[in-house]
Image (spheres, rainbow, N blue to C red):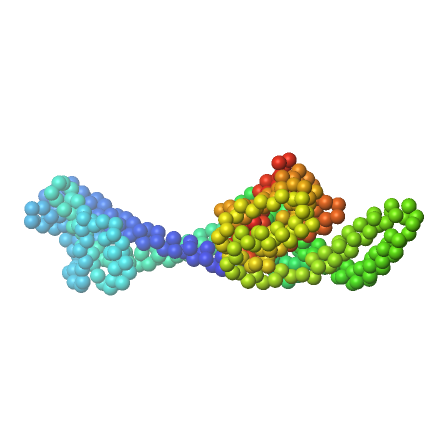
Length: 444
């Protein structure tokens, strides 16, 4: 990239120099022609002081030589006055130039033509004369102009190369330190991060730059750091999950044995044992439930949804019957119209609705009210409970961290949202407070 940048910079400068070169060469040509005209005018003025405007042949030749012209004449009213006649016959090809009518584009074209002109060609140049209505005409050899233009071109070429190398080097250094070098660091970091994100060590140091490159570098450093930390955390969680899976079988067997022992204790006549056994049984049931749900969450992959048309009213009713089977005192209200259909996976939808309705009932200790209603995006499941605690809201959809009940694992909402997203929908918390909590199930 560095070499390409240097070459492109020099090429761009050379292109600019070439565009400027042609007008510069045309200006050089016009100056050369005007100098010959001025020299011819001065030579013509010398005749004004001579008697009868006549000079000797020797003086005439000297004036022509000093003016670097071959002949000088003045035209007026279709009359031609030979002021300084040529010293030799003017044989050979000629080119007539009228400086009074020639523009810049014409001058550029004539300049290009001069480089390819034969060396023996002569120029007949016309310009304003000594008085209005009079035209000064001179004859000059084109060879000196041609060679002057060639020399001028070589000088401009050498100067252009010097300017290009100098300016290109300065621009290259500026771009290298301001653009290329930071991008090389970013590229090297991205390549190493791609090879091994978990053990990524080539960290980009923060930069105080506030331009786009600085913002991109800082954003990339933050992103790579966050992803690397997440990958390491997941690796540790995977190792922990593997260890939990290995001990889960033995743990469940141990808890089952303890539960059998508690059943045996329940037949004891000791009043203290009778008071302790119920608490022991509830503790064992919670431990077995937590172990089973943990293993199930760790092993389960969200199955591929099979989308089809589902009657939402019927699906809601069936989910409520299952979810409230142990909450008979909870009042349930299903306001979804009877013939409302949607595209969803029936099993996924049933599991989501059953879990949300069960959570709503348990949040009211089984004596409240649960409502399911249709909305623009899908369904809304609401209750009249006390609302979710602030600590629960911080980790609402995180497994093992979002439950507000002592015996809850916090897996229900996490699994429900995973199922909703697998269908192309989502699960959102709309509101929560002293008047109740409401979730929105977005359907595809």
